[in-house]
Image 1 (cartoon, one colour):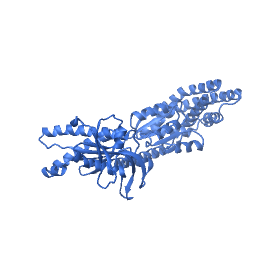
Image 2: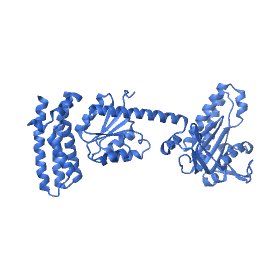
Image 3: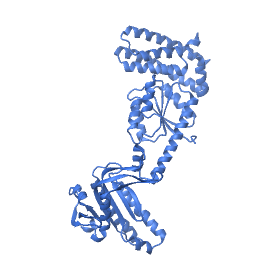
Image 4: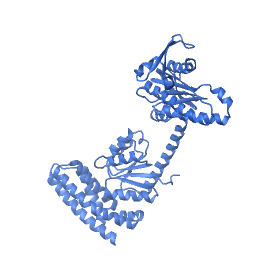
Length: 347
Length: 115
């Protein structure tokens, strides 16, 4: 499997070593790019994609330790396998490389057979890791994938501050009954594509889709500045996108759709729920309930976006809102202040 | 005599794995680069730049090993590990030995390559 051409970056200040190593790797059929110090190497790594890094330790400007340290803190680079090739003396230096995340250590002068074996093994491991990441990404959001990678998988939650959004298509059931199943699926796919775009471009994460409804989180699993502001900005963009979408649909004589969005902010318990075999990342708590109630209430209030008092206060008047007064939702003992975000239709 | 200067097995191995032509080109590169490293060692000694001194010694050791230049590599390794000596005369003496070892290695390698 490792027979495919891989892109390798060789970082080595010594010209003889660099030429020899490049030659050995090219003979194996891989593509080689060269850098003669650590700083130049990092610039290349951030500019183009590589499959494997062969790294010397002793170098001017920035040495191999410096490169490993920087890669370790860079989310884009921390998974790139590194084989340290060096004639640096002392076990403590080798230990330091491995501690900094190097996959392997090969002493110079390099034995070509050993070099090939290590390169093939590293590339194979990277391929499996990439496949796994791709799989996780397809079924989870990249934020959840990143959180899983950083903290590992564990059922159980933590308390975080976040804004929770619920959205769905109004009058969806009659619409489903009036059109072909193919049209419904196509509509849903277009709708979700637009909603995902608006939500993720504001730092939100869609964590659940049920039918035509979705739940999105702002501030979990990864922290986000100004959760409430971002959630409301995403909501406004969603309304805007649906407007444009409707223009396209009316040109094709298709029925218009409208959506309702509820947003609440505050403490939530976030984490993976389910079983060891099948789990999902979600948030639960009062804030989540309130957001769901607000979304349901949009129909009654005849407004597209409803938010709670906490979200409204966090906006600090950056976005115009109308106070709709206190509403006592089903199953709640205390009334909640409800605000409608002013959208273009209501101007 | 040339056995102690060059480990011929190492050079033969290099020729067989990388190709004789490439080995010859690589040797040319080494012969171009090495005098600069010897100069670096002397100027690092003169400026008291321990880091630069160690790095240049390290490079010579590493390249010496690549071509099987055993005595050159051994002397360079001693300098790498010892670093700058408090007594400059001590280092200058070692550098003179290193220069001589390099001259012998270069001559022997040239002969091996053309022979």
